[in-house]
Length: 399
Image (cartoon, rainbow, N blue to C red):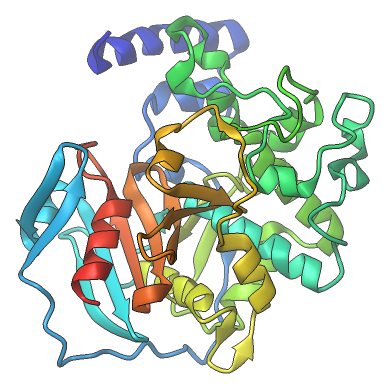
């Protein structure tokens, strides 16, 4: 079935589900019907909670003498390709591209509908923000450690076969709770799939309180699971006595002197829970600052935001991780790994790069070996162009 037929069929099923379950304009199925396939504007349908910055704004220095390459050579799904920066921008519908080398901006370019202060949906880059907040909460003693059982903080999950599920398992996307991605779901069942429930749901806390153990043992395999960041968000709420938005503001946005306010989208006004799986929105320049925080081992302008130990633990490969990958099996074959909601790529010289990744090519790419941070925001209409590999090529080209 081609994509057009798939979407038409899915829309018909959504309508049936919508009529069957009611016509609440804030409901899961109404949202799904009116936004069948998520795009960079989909998060605009959700209520938001602002994450305020606080003066003074931290400066990002520019290297005005740096000459960025006119032609870029990079790996695509179909093979090696070369392109001008402008052509690449157009073909990949890029809204923002920032490259920081040796602590200075060497490229800052925006699409025709974007500018420096534009706030952009980053989809699953949100998970990397979330895991950073978990790390800070551990350092503050609000959470004991990553090996704490989840039921310590969410007792609603007791006696459901999940008593041994740990916070670490959540951030490693380990098996334990069944989760079938929409790509693997028969179209008649798409409206009731976990992807629809978690992305469009208007009561995310309620969704995860009813979870139980799945068919695969806890920790047995890698299985990307959007229930997990919701559980992490609940743990943060309960241990910090703050909303995820306020904790983001107090622990990252204000102390780093971010340039622009950011936002967490919420499941609903009534429930007021941050969509911790996909719901963060920020400017490209502030996401570059966040990437630099990790490149600089958790330090920002002489201030410790995050411990070096956590940065290393969250982003480095684990040679003992031999889990089977139930989804994205190509990634480890390419030298890739996944750790605490960061994706990683091993290089031929035994170094590694790591990145925060989101749907449609949202990316914060950190290359320690070349002292480079790359942020890309936009759409990705051609799956041949994979931004992790384009960013890797850019980092190598300006080494």
